[in-house]
Image 1 (cartoon, helix red, strand yellow):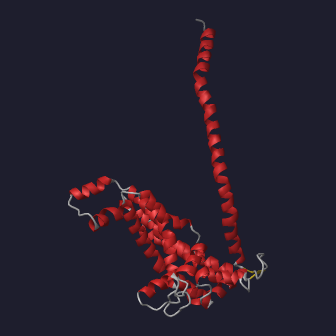
Image 2 (cartoon, helix red, strand yellow):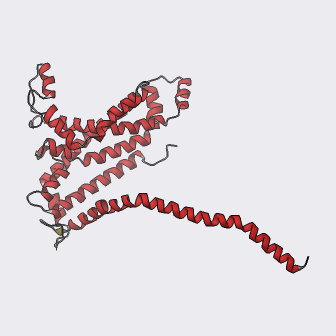
Image 3 (tube, one colour):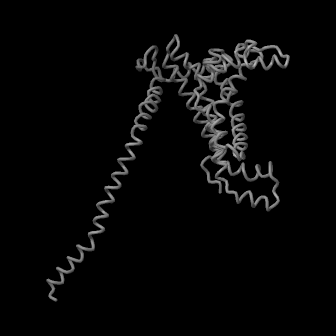
Length: 324
C-alpha cells in the first residue's frame, strides 16, 4: 500500500473513531446548559425575592441608621453614630433587651425539652403514627396573630368564663386577670404557652428525622453490652446521635425568641415590662415620632446581638463539626 493510501485510511479511521466522542462532546455541553437553565429557572425568582425583600432593606436600614430620617425613608442629614448613642442611652430600649433575654431563657430550654420528649413519644407509637405527627405539626401552620387572638379571647381572657379561669374555678381558685396583672406577672404564662403550642410541632419533626437516622445496630450492640432501656440508652446512644439536630434546634429557637413580636403585640400590647425590642423599635420607627434613623440603629444593634449569640452558641456546641 502506498503512503498516500495509508494516510487516507488513517484519516478515515480517525474520523470514524472520533465520531462517538464528538457526539458525546456535543451532547454534554448541551446537557450542562440545560441543567444551568433549569437551576436559574427555579432558583432565580427566590434569589430575586431574597435580594429585593431581604438584603436591600437590610442595607438600606444600615444606611439610615447613620442619618437623621424622621418621617422619611430617605437619608437626609448625616449624623454619624449619634443614633446609636441615643438608642443605647434609652432606658426603655435597654429594658426591652432584658425582657426578651428573660423570654429566651424561658422559651428556648422549654421548647427544646418538650419537642424532644414529644418526638420520642411519637416515634415509639406503632399505630396511627402519621396521625399523631400531623396533629402535633398542624399548629405550626397557624399564624401567630390568629393563635394570639385565640389565647386572648378564649383561653386567657381574664373573665370567669375563660377556659383557664373555668379550670381554676373548678379547683376553687379565684379567677385571674392573666393579661393585665403585672404583679405577679401572670402574662408570661399566655406568652410562653402560645409560642410553645405554635413551635413544638416543627421542632418535633426535626427530632423525629434525627431519631430515624440512628442505626438500630447501635441499640442492639448496647443491649448486648448490658445497657438498660430508658435513661441509660437515651444518655449514651440517642442524645449523642442527635447532637447536630439538637444544636440546630437550639440555634433556631434562640433566633426565633429574639425575633418575638406578634404574640407580644397582640396579647399585651405596649406593657413596658413585657415589651421585646422589636416591638419597642416598631413604636419608635412607625409610631407617632416616626424616627426611622434611631429605629434603624436599634434594629442593627438587635441584629448584631442575634448574630453574636448565634455564632457563640454554634462555636460552643460545635455546630457543623463532624460527630466523629
